[in-house]
Image (cartoon, rainbow, N blue to C red; front, side):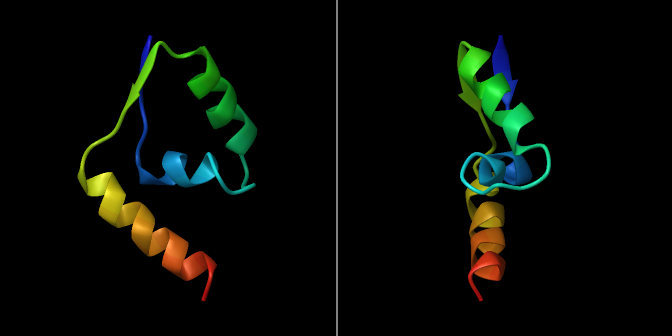
Amino acid sequence: MILYLDSSAIVKLYVDEPYAGIVRAAVAEAAACCSPLIAYAESGQRWRRLFE
């Protein structure tokens, strides 16, 4: 299975948020993961809000 990750799912890989365990398990089972390039910028905004 190829797993599509949006920016909120990418953040859940690194931060303990609701449903983070589900995302991590899905990534572990996936044959490949992908996300749009814009997810890089969107997740950057999320990181900034987390550490302000």
